[in-house]
Image 1 (cartoon, one colour):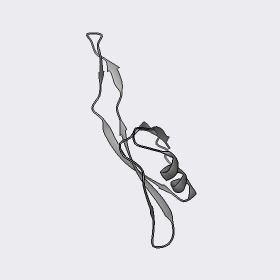
Image 2 (tube, rainbow, N blue to C red; image 1 turned 90 degrees about the horizontal axis):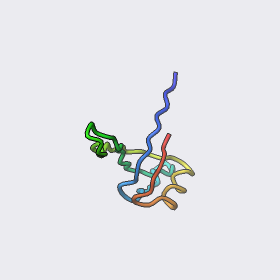
Image 3 (tube, rainbow, N blue to C red; image 1 turned 135 degrees about the vertical axis):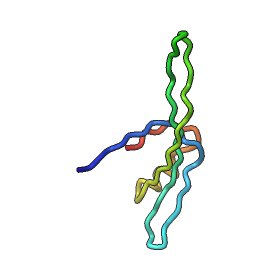
Length: 77
């Protein structure tokens, strides 16, 4: 049985690109996720952010490192 998690949020910093000793490419991302809700008084407020650390491997890592920047909205599955 496999599980899938989808995280949508904004990058908190530039992706960090590295190559392992075995030659595999990896990009590390930090994503901030928060939601906007309507309170009982009708006013909207943002929930405190949750932070996710994500590793992207292989050719996708190079693409991510070159094309994504701080503040970009991303969806990671």
